[in-house]
Image 1: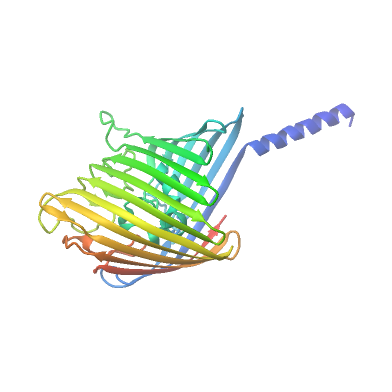
Image 2: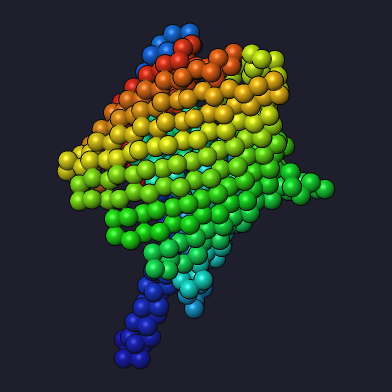
Length: 383
């Protein structure tokens, strides 16, 4: 082989290696599967196999293409499934967890289009126990602040700023996709997060017009509430020490002219015979983790929720006490075993509805009393 040919071959190999490094598609996923026990699920205690209590079982494809000058084309397609029976999750969608495409710039940030998480999930949820390490057992009542990722947002455009001096911002608008109904089932959300050393702090805001109504808007069949509108205001902070993480979180959820919730299976007409005009939930949470070793940790959280349930004939003010514990051991970088426990007590306002009964999102059903306990033992494998 002559010298010129060798030089050309080496140049071609170098260019190919560079192109391969700059453009990639990755297959990833995880399976969270275990056994749950609920002491009171309405008609008695319940044992059940349950998938995705801490993190939803999933697989996905993500990729990027280097476009030059600091720009990249990106995409993500993420499927959710039930490991107990193999069924599709998120309303039988093929890529129900996420499905988006967009552009990323090192200098100007990232712009994406499709089915995505809103800014309250990206910036606030990770600072709560439910969104960070505990999942369902640490959710607020009815997951009213969506910190446990109950719904995603369709038809959305999201912009994420570059991180500047520890600050990152996000904004989202999601379209109704309804002819002549621009404001029907649309979503607007914005959030900001600041990181400096062990400190992380965030504020977030979200508004949905007519959540759960229609089939082609921003939040449809996976909406937590069906109502005229929903508004969430969130703030949280955490600090990471050498062996511990301590966090506080506050969220306010206001639901106007509500007609239902995915967590309320029975009649919702209040005892006073009036019509619901507004539901509000104020959640105050303290959470933390202690790492005995890098592979063994214990987490705990407590959430106090004040409810305001207003009707045309009077108002109710229930209160919820929710506590959870989790012990996790990572036997490898990809496989973990964990145990969880959750307790909820409702200070009943005697509404005559299921608002009077305890129900953690991790349970097998609504309790027949103001108290409920849930236990879980499970494993997670990542690939």
